[in-house]
Length: 323
Length: 223
Image 1 (cartoon, rainbow over the protein chains, first blue to last red):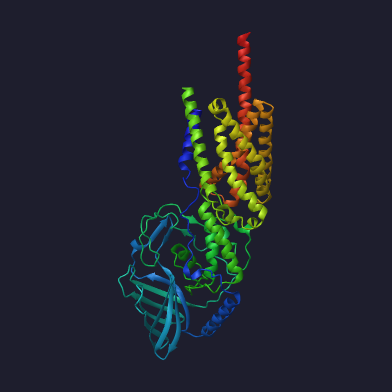
Image 2 (cartoon, each protein chain N blue to C red):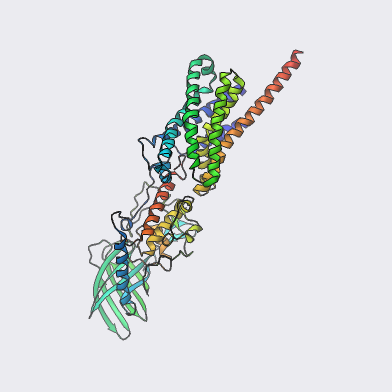
């Protein structure tokens, strides 16, 4: 009886142990707009940041110009398009959008919108009726996800609809946006607003998964990478992280701590789980799709350190080999 | 029936030993050709800059795998009795590698172990004890003291196998209670070798008692 037990135990261990010593498919996804270029010097980034915030300052008091931020909602209730990840965790396919009105010249308006890693210019016309400004602006049309915005600004709120030119999955959107002012602040910490659940981590990979923001074909299983409460305590934008702090963090925490640096710089995420997580942060505004030149020296060092341990965690954490 | 299940138990143990040694070989192959940024070294970037750590690390990695492999053959009764020469050669290499390369290099790496003083202490003790057990096993066979040779070789190989058990415990911990990586590492740094050594000590105690009983029984039968 005792022997049988030992056989069973050994059998389980042998079968259970992954035949590979490491996860050779592990890949840390680094979005193009966030890659660190080694050649760049630090003074450049500093001047660029200050220049930009200077530009934004002039738009502060303008009733129209600036960033209008809020959720880009589905116009028709179509629950089938929601992504249900787990009990109580689903994503209704709504992203935070930033409609930036850049220039108003007589009845012409120029601007751009940033949503889900897409930065698209638009132009159109503006009509004033009493206290209300009515807008009809169009995106160029050379992108699959381009469309037409029709909205009005009244009493400091922007409301409207958007219709895609092409027959994409979610063709009609509506939105109710608030004017927000973006300034890079390294001291921002995460709020406990939405849990981070990376539903890609355990997705069956034999199905194609497109990263663009309106196409999806995916199969979702039951266990997911997530993060712990340490993500609310560690700030990689205003403190120099040390090896000792980083080496005990799990992959989900490392990923969030690194990506929070990007979020502070107003990076618009292509990666869906990250986008869902950061969109829920009240301070977060998608402003840029390229923040390569915006990092401080401290952030660059922290990103490099975090990436090293992220790679190690995804390759070795739950494998026989160790890094 | 007992004989049959004994055979199965032995085969299962041997097969898992071979399987895990194979995995250890794969781990070793990660470091060929010499690279300073792969696998374990990715989290050892400060240490690997020292020349002496480079020497310690690579001599440890490249030689210890042979210690593990040679050891597999040493406990076979058939090889021990029928092919004494093989037993002697492999045993000589086993002792030679541990005493001159694997244990000293392990000691140097232990001084720089991840996980702070807690795991450093464990690895330092392990390196010293590994050296000592192997040396004692060697000295006792020079004196033809087979009993003591066997005892110390069991202990030495228990520590050799900690390379496997440490990783196995790590894998079990992270796939069950999912502890953070460095907490896990601190635990397995001790568990990896203490567990094996305890098993051996219990076995030695048990077999001693058993032999005593057996001899007293036969004595009684004889008289």
